Length: 348
Image (tube, rainbow, N blue to C red; front, side):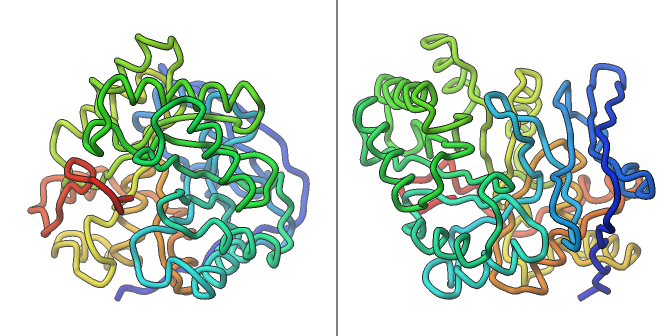
């Protein structure tokens, strides 16, 4: 494992919002006057009109987290979240402690789903953490297999709100489309349910997960409502059609959130090239791959209960040189699979 850089500490001081424009791209960031290095570390590529800001955390919080503007919300969505799926310890006391460690380290986005069965554990962690609700961004996902109508979705949202005990959801996603056995008509009906939940003030922003371009275009054509977010598997070795989908979503104003950002297990080397690049920066493979995703304008939600790994995942205030990006993107893919294409249940 490469040397782990220390997370940047945030000193007390005045913060101001500064925005500037690059060709075709609007960037904003809450910037401390003494933090030019962190300000310069913002991702520049492929944000395509997405506003970027920094999550303002209390003095003493260690991590400085870039964030993305999401349609429907007055808050910026942290770009480095905490995933709670698909690993040992994603429920119960282990998860409670993991969420608390993430929040203590300065993280502010928790990503969950009804199918994960851990809403109440997350509620307990939030309550124990003492972090104010308005500082948090909580994303959940509708268990589409259990819903057949717009009314079912609204009830599902109500159930999540009751379990999470947070008053409202920052973002709610449809967890899958055709790949989950959901036909076009049902997908549209469930999307209309999320639209209704948003209009009722239960959810600030709504989006989809594991939806391809055809599915998203169909929802937009039928309802005239563009998803704010599409959550997908994304890392340097995804098929070209996934890269095309990410670009298309961003062009349409959607934020893309990546799961599976490490291309496989954290404990496996994601290829010799990634290891070499990580060593050159004094970072871990995971940090390099997460930084790569941020540089595509994509949010990440790595999951771990390790306090050390949580600190690593939030410590991404460095930049990859163009030559290193090219090396990573042209490297041979380690073993992985595109989970969402074959999902029926239990996927991210």
